[in-house]
Every structure is written in structure tokens, then in C-alpha cells.
Length: 451
Image (cartoon, rainbow, N blue to C red; front, side, top):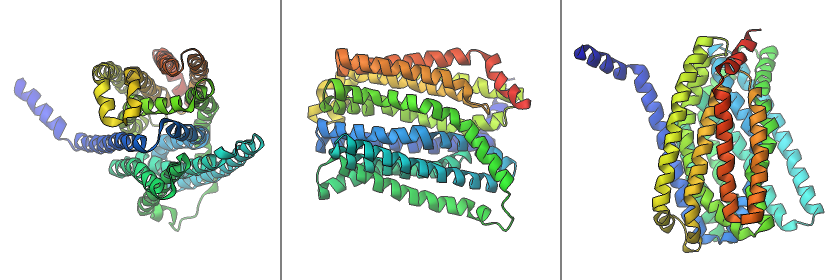
């Protein structure tokens, strides 16, 4: 019996499918590991150049780009990830790509309109010093959106090495070019953001070269474009994506309210402190979550298919539940390590003027881990063709997070906002687990597609 089990095990691990999955996970892990390393090195170097006030300005400026991502490119990216694979399976990839291009045109028009409104608002309110920062941030958001769209196409087709290379390159180039420009043009937050823009343009150009190599033959094929199929795919992506837009505004306000609440009730220096805490305690575990999400998302969506086969839905659900348990365990372990080693971590990774706040790092790790577990749970609900089930929890938790951020900043300042972050992440996880514990509600998504 043992020999038979050994033979089955060897055949399993030597199968081409397992080997392919292993290589995919390797490339994703390598890309995300390099991204984390690049982010940590960037924090160390940028905090050496930018004082807490300037670092706070940089963090506030990036919140504007977050709005564009939540409202426009983020939902579009999710729609591409969900339907690019099925389009290839249906031999309609060319029509799907043209549908995506149509959506990109409208996305660009939306961003340009938003940029105009922001500039007019800043001008009317006499906030002239923020205009340059806002324009640079919106430019960064648009370029990043194009880059992420190409990245989503390649991720959907599981071109792991390509996506890993570009994600890591983007992280390293951003702070390198930011430091280079500040050395030439002066130490300003807007100059640092301009370095981010140039870095993203370089990565976008590289992404387009890989896109052209993979898809140009499909796009330029002599077969005529079928407008009805182009419209079908663009509408499917829109239908899938619009719920992301509904909660995107609330989620952006929640994600930005921590920094702006500190700006209102405290000072810009505390915004800089909070940004460092977030980058060292919160973001690494979120980026590492990207390893598993990026690995699992196309696999789960491929297993689910169009969401009408209940057996395929059940198998995907079982895989996802195992990953949720693993992420909760990782959160507990990471928080414990941060509690023990926070002083040493800050001594290595940030300039001396930021090190007094290291005691708050374990709480940010806990917040990041709880929110990461929540996002992995969300994958379970996103596997259907409809995402409307997520509207209520996303908006509800975002409103709760906004209230907690404002109250925390008002009563306890920096410490209060950190605790509010933990509270928001915990509420998000509990609400998503509650939804995921109702399999009948999840299956109803698939049954609706059969009608």
C-alpha cells in the first residue's frame, strides 16, 4: 500500500499541470517579493530625503490617484480578469479586446473630466499650492490605469513571468526616478510624484511591447470585427464592474479619510508618520496577499467558468476556504513577529526621525492581515458572474471605517487612526465571512445565470 501511495504521489507532483502551477507560483512569488523589497528600500531612501511633512504631502497626493483607481480602472481591471479567459475559451478574444479598448476610451474621458473639476475646485478655494500635485497625481493615475489594464490581460491568460517582471520593475523604478528627479529639481512632493509618473511610463512601454507580441496578430487578423460581439463583451465587463464603482467612492473616502482626518485634526507631520506605518506594517502583507490572489484569481475564475455549473462552483469554493484559513493564521503570526521586532525593523528601514512610532507597527500588521483575509474571502463571492452581492457589505464597512477614522483622529490622533484601521479590517472580515458561510446565497448567483 505504501509503495502505491508513493507512486501516486510521485505521479501527482511530476504531472505537467502541477509543474506548471509550481512555476506560476514561483514567478508570482518572485515578483511580489521583489516588489516588497523595493517598497522597503524606497521607504528607507525617501524618508531620508523627505521630512515627515513632505512625506505627508506625498501621501495626501496619492489619495487622489486612489479615487481614479476605485472609480474607473480598478473596476475595469476586475472585469477583464473575470471575462478575458472565457473570451479566449469562446474564440472571441479579438472582439473582447476591442470591447476593452472602447471602455478605455470612456475611462480616459472620465479622468480628464475629473481632472478639470479638481483643478477648478482647487482654484476656487485658493489652494494654488496643491494644483501641481493634483495634476501630477491624476496623470500618474491615468498612466497607471493603462499599465494595469495590460497587466490584467496578461494575468488573465496566466503569463506569470511577464506580470511579475513588470510589477517588480515598477516598484523599484518609482523611488529611483523620484530620488533622481529630486536631486536635479529640488526636494518637493510633486517632483517625487513626477518620478513615479516617469517610472510608470517606462513600465507601460514595456508592457505594450509584450502585448503587441502576444495579441497584435489577433487584433490585425483579416477577419472582420463583429460589432455585436464587441458590444456583448464590453457590456458583460461593464455589468460585472459597475458594482465596484458603486462602493468605490465609499471605499476611496474610507481609505483616504485616515490621512485627511489627521490633516484636519492633527498636522501633516502625523500624516507622514501614518504613511510610514502603513508602508511598513500594512502594505507588505497586502502585497504578499497579491501573490495568492494573483495566483488564485484566474484559476478560480477558470474553474467556475460562466458560473452555471454548480459542481465547478463548489470545487472553487472549497479551494478558496482553505486559503482563507491560511491567511488568518498568517495574520496572527505576522502580528506576533511585529510585536517582538518592531524596534529593530524601524531602526533598519526608516530614518531616525520616524522611529518613535514603531510601537504602533504591530497594530498595522494586524490591520493589514485582517483586511487581506477579507479580500481573499471576497474572491469567493466574485467568482460568480454578478458582484451585486458585495454592494451592501462594501459600502457598509466603508461608512463604518470613515466614522472610525474621523473619531480616532479627533480623540486620539495618530494612535486613534491606527486603531480605527484595525476596527475597519475586522468588521470587513467578519461581514465577508458571514456572506461566505451562506452557500445557498452564493449558489443563487450561478442559478440566476441559467435563467
